[in-house]
Image 1 (cartoon, rainbow, N blue to C red):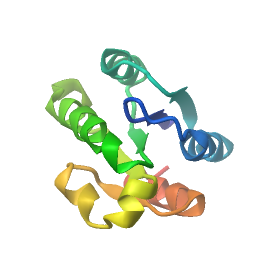
Image 2: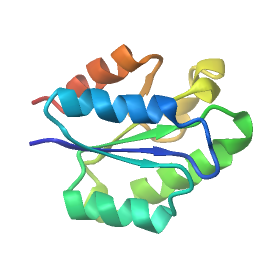
Image 3: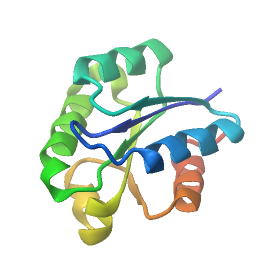
Image 4: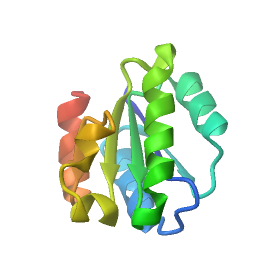
Length: 126
């Protein structure tokens, strides 16, 4: 089966989108884990390794949390054991800056929960 981790970037407190994304993928048969807010990067990496995560969803609403998104994406991209893990981003900061996801090394930007489900299926076919 496919596995997914949803997390809010750094101090981001707007967590409903990430939680909804996790719940949606769980209903589509994914082993989906929601880590929530203030999750240390090392814990995110450890769970990604433990699950052999196929997808990580990173959510950020506020522009001031973009640095945390960039840092998490950079660490994920640098970890050899996660080379095949896809990154999908979502939230207000990406809606306001629609091309930003590309510069982070992410494979997509979900503009809605429905979009998230559809992109997840494209990025990691079942």
